[in-house]
Image (spheres, helix red, strand yellow):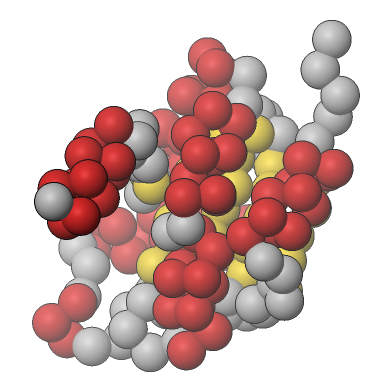
Length: 145
Protein backbone atom coordinates (compact mmCIF):
# COMPACT_ATOMS: atom_id res chain seq x y z
CA UNK A 1 0.00 0.00 0.00
CA UNK A 2 2.83 2.39 0.94
CA UNK A 3 4.56 1.72 -2.39
CA UNK A 4 1.29 2.37 -4.24
CA UNK A 5 0.88 5.74 -2.51
CA UNK A 6 4.45 6.76 -3.30
CA UNK A 7 3.99 5.73 -6.93
CA UNK A 8 0.75 7.71 -7.19
CA UNK A 9 2.44 10.75 -5.64
CA UNK A 10 5.12 10.74 -8.32
CA UNK A 11 2.58 10.18 -11.09
CA UNK A 12 0.55 13.19 -9.94
CA UNK A 13 3.61 15.41 -9.50
CA UNK A 14 4.34 17.17 -12.78
CA UNK A 15 7.40 15.66 -14.36
CA UNK A 16 10.46 17.78 -14.78
CA UNK A 17 12.04 17.99 -18.21
CA UNK A 18 15.71 18.76 -18.67
CA UNK A 19 16.37 19.98 -22.18
CA UNK A 20 19.65 19.33 -23.97
CA UNK A 21 19.39 22.04 -26.62
CA UNK A 22 19.92 25.60 -25.42
CA UNK A 23 18.37 27.15 -28.53
CA UNK A 24 15.15 25.23 -27.84
CA UNK A 25 15.33 26.35 -24.21
CA UNK A 26 15.62 29.99 -25.30
CA UNK A 27 12.50 29.61 -27.44
CA UNK A 28 10.60 27.98 -24.59
CA UNK A 29 11.74 30.62 -22.10
CA UNK A 30 10.71 33.38 -24.51
CA UNK A 31 7.23 31.91 -24.86
CA UNK A 32 6.74 31.19 -21.17
CA UNK A 33 8.73 34.17 -19.81
CA UNK A 34 10.71 31.91 -17.51
CA UNK A 35 14.36 31.98 -16.60
CA UNK A 36 16.77 29.27 -17.71
CA UNK A 37 18.83 27.16 -15.34
CA UNK A 38 21.81 25.47 -17.00
CA UNK A 39 23.57 22.63 -15.17
CA UNK A 40 27.04 21.66 -16.40
CA UNK A 41 27.65 18.13 -15.22
CA UNK A 42 29.99 15.19 -15.51
CA UNK A 43 27.30 12.62 -14.81
CA UNK A 44 29.51 9.55 -14.67
CA UNK A 45 32.73 10.87 -13.13
CA UNK A 46 32.11 14.05 -11.09
CA UNK A 47 31.16 13.24 -7.50
CA UNK A 48 29.86 16.72 -6.64
CA UNK A 49 27.78 16.69 -9.89
CA UNK A 50 26.15 13.42 -8.91
CA UNK A 51 25.57 14.73 -5.40
CA UNK A 52 24.01 17.96 -6.74
CA UNK A 53 21.64 16.00 -8.94
CA UNK A 54 20.57 13.61 -6.17
CA UNK A 55 20.49 15.96 -3.19
CA UNK A 56 19.02 19.07 -4.84
CA UNK A 57 17.98 18.86 -8.50
CA UNK A 58 15.98 15.64 -8.16
CA UNK A 59 14.20 16.51 -4.92
CA UNK A 60 10.47 17.22 -4.77
CA UNK A 61 11.18 20.73 -3.41
CA UNK A 62 13.33 21.72 -6.38
CA UNK A 63 11.15 19.93 -8.92
CA UNK A 64 7.97 21.63 -7.66
CA UNK A 65 9.59 25.05 -7.96
CA UNK A 66 11.34 24.43 -11.27
CA UNK A 67 8.23 23.04 -12.96
CA UNK A 68 6.50 26.42 -12.76
CA UNK A 69 9.43 28.86 -12.70
CA UNK A 70 12.32 27.59 -14.84
CA UNK A 71 13.36 26.12 -18.15
CA UNK A 72 16.05 23.55 -17.40
CA UNK A 73 19.07 22.66 -19.53
CA UNK A 74 21.62 19.98 -18.75
CA UNK A 75 25.00 20.10 -20.47
CA UNK A 76 26.53 16.75 -19.63
CA UNK A 77 30.14 15.77 -20.24
CA UNK A 78 30.36 12.04 -19.49
CA UNK A 79 33.69 10.23 -19.80
CA UNK A 80 32.73 6.56 -19.92
CA UNK A 81 32.40 5.08 -23.37
CA UNK A 82 29.01 3.54 -22.56
CA UNK A 83 27.63 7.02 -21.75
CA UNK A 84 29.06 8.77 -24.80
CA UNK A 85 26.78 11.39 -26.30
CA UNK A 86 26.08 11.83 -29.99
CA UNK A 87 28.48 14.05 -31.91
CA UNK A 88 25.73 16.67 -32.32
CA UNK A 89 24.96 16.70 -28.60
CA UNK A 90 28.64 16.89 -27.69
CA UNK A 91 29.04 19.86 -30.03
CA UNK A 92 26.00 21.63 -28.52
CA UNK A 93 27.32 21.07 -24.99
CA UNK A 94 30.80 22.32 -25.92
CA UNK A 95 29.34 25.41 -27.56
CA UNK A 96 27.25 26.12 -24.47
CA UNK A 97 30.32 25.64 -22.27
CA UNK A 98 32.32 28.09 -24.38
CA UNK A 99 29.62 30.67 -23.76
CA UNK A 100 28.77 30.05 -20.09
CA UNK A 101 31.49 27.82 -18.60
CA UNK A 102 34.77 28.62 -20.39
CA UNK A 103 36.86 27.49 -17.39
CA UNK A 104 35.31 24.00 -17.49
CA UNK A 105 34.08 23.94 -13.89
CA UNK A 106 32.03 20.98 -12.64
CA UNK A 107 29.44 21.18 -11.37
CA UNK A 108 28.64 24.65 -12.58
CA UNK A 109 25.12 26.03 -12.58
CA UNK A 110 24.03 29.18 -14.37
CA UNK A 111 20.75 31.07 -14.10
CA UNK A 112 19.93 33.25 -17.12
CA UNK A 113 17.02 35.41 -18.10
CA UNK A 114 14.78 34.40 -21.00
CA UNK A 115 17.28 35.96 -23.44
CA UNK A 116 20.30 34.08 -22.11
CA UNK A 117 21.81 36.92 -20.05
CA UNK A 118 23.48 35.60 -16.89
CA UNK A 119 21.68 36.50 -13.67
CA UNK A 120 23.62 34.30 -11.23
CA UNK A 121 25.95 31.31 -11.17
CA UNK A 122 26.98 28.65 -8.68
CA UNK A 123 30.50 27.20 -8.83
CA UNK A 124 30.63 23.68 -7.41
CA UNK A 125 28.11 22.06 -5.13
CA UNK A 126 25.93 24.76 -3.55
CA UNK A 127 26.23 23.86 0.10
CA UNK A 128 22.52 24.42 0.67
CA UNK A 129 19.42 22.40 1.32
CA UNK A 130 17.01 22.09 -1.63
CA UNK A 131 14.89 24.77 0.06
CA UNK A 132 17.92 27.04 0.43
CA UNK A 133 18.91 26.57 -3.21
CA UNK A 134 15.37 27.37 -4.38
CA UNK A 135 15.40 30.50 -2.19
CA UNK A 136 18.68 31.63 -3.78
CA UNK A 137 17.18 31.21 -7.24
CA UNK A 138 14.00 33.05 -6.25
CA UNK A 139 15.99 35.95 -4.76
CA UNK A 140 18.02 36.27 -7.96
CA UNK A 141 14.96 36.52 -10.20
CA UNK A 142 13.59 39.90 -11.18
CA UNK A 143 10.36 40.87 -9.49
CA UNK A 144 7.32 40.16 -11.62
CA UNK A 145 4.73 42.80 -12.30
